[in-house]
Image (cartoon, rainbow, N blue to C red; front, side, top):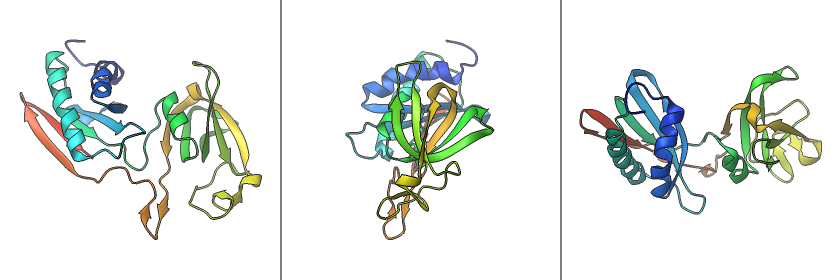
Length: 208
């Protein structure tokens, strides 16, 4: 791990204890083009939204850590998850129960790979968890802040079908942003600001 290209999963294992020790949650780690290492972080459920100062603090710690571990990268970007926050583990599927989500499977299920609906939660034992999702009869429409008992656009709770998908079969999942045009987003997470600094010839940046 001290030389050459380190895959994102290995980098995640390395940096997650540091991020957690600072009081944050590590959401995702990606290696992008031109040597960019993108680290997505979030606050814990009990804390408020993540800010620019938080990203800068994490960036400084990770820049030092990866210099010690000799991790090969050109630029480090620490950012908030945004409105369409990715769900990357069992904890996320429990934490965001009740939220609208989009899911993509690794392989088609009954001819479909993409599903959208209201996340109902996670069942099952570790290693065999199943994600419960409420969708309309057509398989999942845009979720929006409705009135009364509507929770999927144009579909009442009584009309929805509940499906279960193996967590291990999900390739990627994200929250669906909900907007209240009378007051902006219902789930604003981050303000779009960014800051960066350079240390030892490699860039570290904080992006919210």
